[in-house]
Length: 336
Image (tube, rainbow, N blue to C red; front, side, top):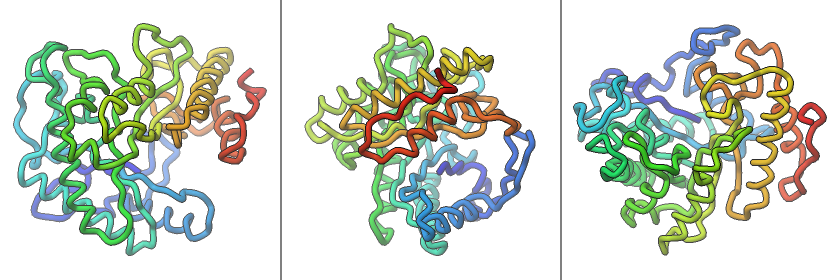
């Protein structure tokens, strides 16, 4: 469950508006169904949990710094960088903790069990933490681990004061395994985090998108994360959630071909990824990124207008119908 902080608290003098309305449109595109944002989402989660109809576990993921909570521009930034991705200032860090407390209190009020908390989305990506490096060179040390560490420790302190079993899930990283001037690698992030952060949870999350034609020059994100975790004593053997996956074009997030042959190939690529993770005893769960196609990151299971579903929908339905310990399902006919 994503929480876009900048949309909820534009004014530091006011608490975050957890009833901030959402129009239900896709970047302005219909069909639309308006709802009262975080409050309605938590109410829906509570209803499902009471009915035993799924959503047994919920993960909160926070992103986007309000303008007033962001430090000034610095280092190697993209031309389109905004305050939403910049490190949080001292006043913002206090408000960040207050946001966590506020969301936890509303969840309890609504009757929703919210156990898992990810302090920040994709801390190794410049869209969420910027700058990643002081100088525009892949050899410049990453600044992201220190920024992320501050957020993790702040989140942990806030959650320690919340009643119930609150758990951190660490990482939530973009699948970068080759360093660049504006992105940090999974390896850099894990290696540079202080023990107080890296040892704060035995569960890590990783984003990994399937590709019809994999780039053999780039190491696999899940394997890379496992190797990085195993290089540290307190993270050795830690378990992983693939909290974002999906399939589209060969370059995830780029234009997606939707002719029948391409859609079938995409489905087979996703099936291969799901089988690999199911065979890995350290991967506990995998989550499709979006159901409805996001036109800015097209890896969905249905088109943006909700007029058709893609073969990958049948694939996920087949996996969802099996018992957790059952073998991988047969490939749906629509994917063949």
